[in-house]
Picture 1 (cartoon, helix red, strand yellow):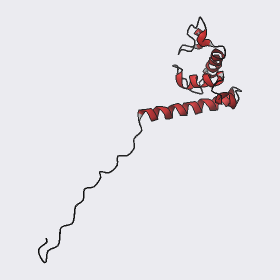
Picture 2 (tube, rainbow, N blue to C red):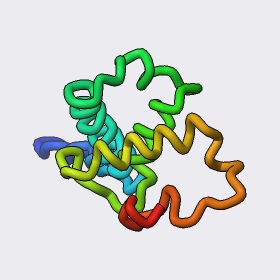
Picture 3 (cartoon, rainbow, N blue to C red):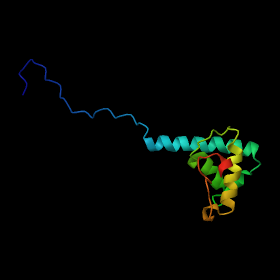
Picture 4 (tube, helix red, strand yellow):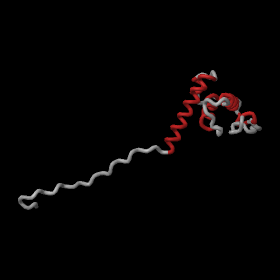
Length: 118
């Protein structure tokens, strides 16, 4: 009870700490970077290689495999505007179109080495 003439103390309720702002995880950052690279390479390929968009969208096509490889997996990590990018893409498309994964001799193919050594 509160003595007569005094004001009761306000009731204090525990509060939730403020929510932490969502931060980017390394996975989401790398997924975003990969998506950006895919888009950049797609733009250049569609403008300069003559590859139809449908071929890049068909997950079973050698064009799709080569596009994903050069944008994401190629250890050379070329810029989409690199003067050698279209040559590497064409050779990667050839590799995937001819089942290069099954070739008996694959010397330097699909490595970061310059394509003249493939």
